[in-house]
Image 1: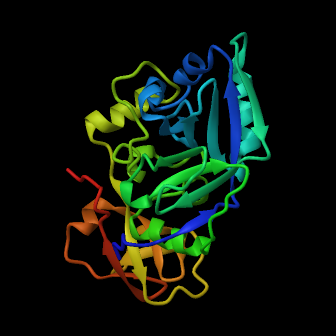
Image 2: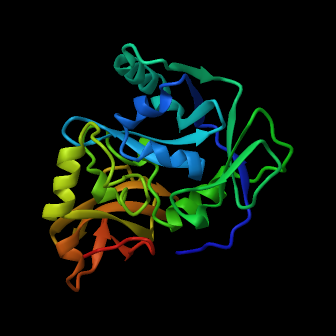
Length: 273
């Protein structure tokens, strides 16, 4: 399942770019997101979250440093809501927030000749994220990238996680570099830090291989014998991601979904204590 040697280039139809400009853009975003935004000056691209006051997932996105203008790479289904949320907190800050309808977001296994192309900050095996108005590369199917993403156990927040319910640490957001533990305050920080230091994480995402994916809906339960141990969060044919109870996985159990056997694999980047 952990395939990594895959060649691909795909424009992602479900991603859009939001432009953030103005002299206060860094301090403005710093108080809202889980990642230390000052790192963008050196790293040029960061992956981050916005949380509810209860520390639950609301948005995940990339911030890209293109100079005086920063880009936010976000799922199209969440873009308008994110803009409204950012505008709500803007107050008197010198910040402009607008959607760029001309910018395209692509993923590639290699660096391509475009103005902005950066290694995915979550995991090197995911290749590069590229930004431009047009690309000359020959495109491969988006399904190739989706299979790669799932084979590495990488969640797509807008597609796989549940707004106002998902707990970031259950989804590996720490290991995927979306959270800075030594930055200033942000919404949901206290409860996120408590979950880390008190060790309150009881579930985690895992890669699953399905024998029969026909008619499986998101949210379908997985079982160890008759005990419910988690649920399917996404799948692309026979490869998927499930959120599972950790204590059950430490035991010798055969897992099933819809009465069919399931193989479970821990993502290589995951650190379980």
